[in-house]
Length: 112
Image (tube, rainbow, N blue to C red; front, side, top):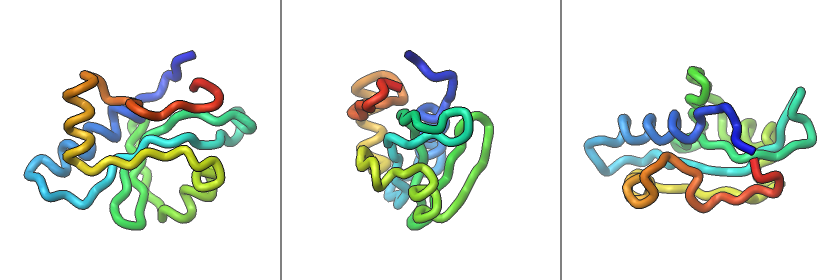
């Protein structure tokens, strides 16, 4: 089952644009999150960017930023424990290797 979101592409493009000159502190994250509202009880793959202790989520046209601790609590991310973080250089290499924005290593329990 494929989702209709653009989180992998949006997050990948964001980190590529922000880190184009190299030596960047941002981290691209692919992780399994717990849904809320209509998706309550369902876990699925998602992508976001870490800027220190802040999360940047550019999916679906948003420019959402919140403290990492709150974002991870709401999505039960630490509880699920299925997260892959990439430096700018690692993300760039994965994009070139796989020829898509991801996910590359993330496998979720739901397959989403």
